[in-house]
Image (tube, rainbow, N blue to C red; front, side, top):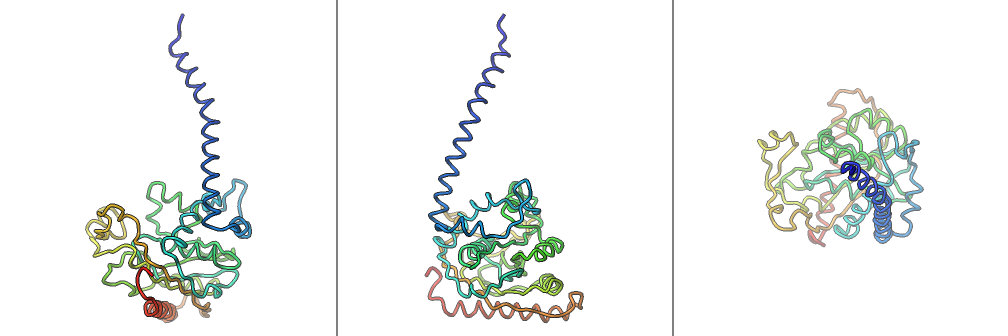
Length: 309
């Protein structure tokens, strides 16, 4: 007697048996093409640089924060494309980055955190020895489907003090944007005007005796043109801001404009003091960092000939 259900089950099992090797072969082919693309964009020494990174991986192939070098490798292809091809980044002062633990403190702009990607690509591709940065991401990003997991696999961590202390005690490089979402969502009318800095990074630097390297990014403010933020919409969706960007309504406007990035890396700053001092004492030290970055931005704006070159 015929058994239709058994026939279907057998057919599915055969299909699955044949499909799994095919899928593995397709995955291997895609990885091979991505590896070739990585070599073209990142240079022949990419693997050597990757091997020289002091990464502490567990038995599952990821570090305690969930960083996966394989995922980060392919994310670096995108970062390298932005850094070297799309934004054609000029880097000044990369030799100022010290070895060991360090806090990179930068201005933040551009509506999307592409400035962080470019800084990361710079530290990996242009610094010697190559460095891998950790960024402190907003807690709300962990609520976005797939985004939180992707950020974690790329080595980025939720911006809470415990994570930052652990990373610095492990002699890692930490990138902090003290302006937070206020900086990245500035309208074009306030471009290159720093907003208030938070105080947490300075308390962290004092507690861990970590040098601060100021970084100024010039160019990112013009990659997406924001003409204002709609607070009612941002509150409705629980977002830090909801920018008005007519650029997104134009076909292809979802891509950032091919502006030219200029990255200025300042000399390390080392501060002494009690991390539990009153806010007024900490604010004076933070003001020095903020003033240094604003001065670097002003110099970069004065030196550049145009937005796209």
